[in-house]
Image 1: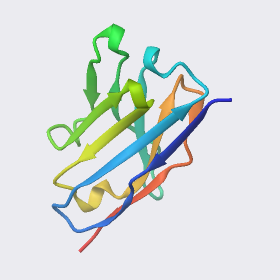
Image 2: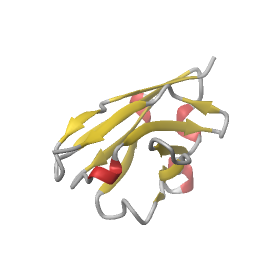
Image 3: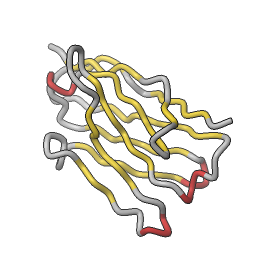
Image 4: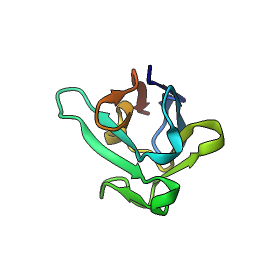
Length: 115
């Protein structure tokens, strides 16, 4: 049974930082890409960042709105993917989800950026 568990969300002031984690189990983590999505109230879920498997070069993709501020990384030994978020803005407020193989989602972690 595949499980994805996010953690690390919270409330920060604009300009602050958070690091989200997504721990996977029940899946051969290292061979699959992992995606971070977010969904703000009243908005559609959007792709934030993606990291490919190491065998595919560990390449990364970022949405334009977060490029230069967010960094996605993975630790295959820990079956975990991270999203380092710096210079946070109020518009980054959302529930953040990790995803693998399109079908598998975590429960989400809330990020709130407010002064």
